[in-house]
Length: 453
Image (cartoon, rainbow, N blue to C red; front, top):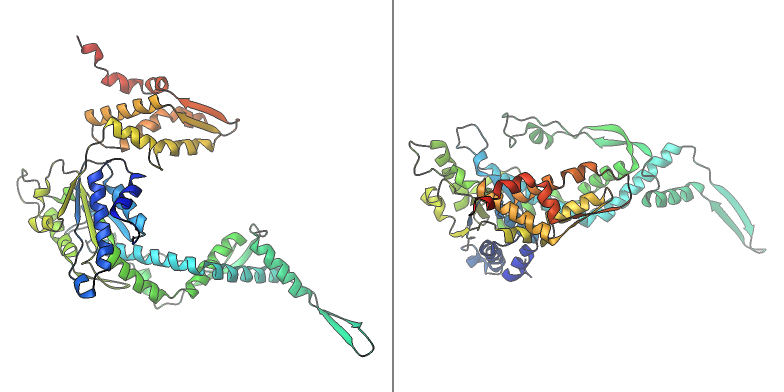
């Protein structure tokens, strides 16, 4: 994050997301402001809070992807939640506090993964030695040491002690490190995973097993598994011993507070439509429950207390029925940056099919290459697919770029079904004629040329 300017952030987002320049600029500036804040004197830094963002736009235009890619770009703790799964305290459902606890869990996992990479080499070395010892014990009957003497001269006698056990152990260790015994089955002691016991059914935040595991000894059992599986288990245990979990928890809390991003999707579904009649207590209650966390408060988690003042909240919704103004005024005020995402056109769909690193056409080509099919799309075919996607979204429910997945799956269904990998490498070219033939019913539906006089 320190090295990336807003322009560089937007350039990175452009590799995966087509269009929506306003939204990209807004999140890029918000992200850069975090770095700017970290460079301020402490007394000034405490007064600067992030400017939360509200994205408005139909489904499938890139709202979630922008936030997710942003978090991945800077390795920031990120959680995506659906506003509709929360209910006001007193109603059935998850409480709003769980989003903060989920963020802390994500931050802890990020830090733990980083620390694991630091100790991986040592943990792997220790694990290979343990596996070597288990294999030696499995073989049994170690050879005895032998002693030989050599007369170097009249006054000197050289005594040579040959230890075949040590020689075998060194040789076996090299073989284990090279993976030569990965498929051999051995018996090791593993930690038994406790079953999840929820105190309140349906509430995953109150797990009795987690509460008991903190002061109850871990149960272990013997299992017969391959050397490769055993290595993974032992490396994990060895890494846990080498990592200071108190430091991990402390760093995780800090990152969640200072770098955390919470993406609240479907926020328009908890807005109260001004045209509707009668009160809607539950939806307004959820808004009021979310408000304290967005404003800034403290939340108690099993890892410690976290402040939410500096967490970046990004809310998003289609706002087809309700309007942004239908949210309670206090919540509106906590999202000062408003961005409206644009509907995707045929030109955008063509770019989505060709430009991003993870374009669906590239994904399908890689999948079919597994079964000896070399897939290639002609430019005219891609333009026709983009045109059909635009028509489908205009005349049916607008689902944005997700429409392309539906069309591509229908287009390649027969090819995917017939491909079995039991034939030589075959090249399949998708032409415009092929698209029109396979999607004939869809094309006919929108062919209005016969009505033109």
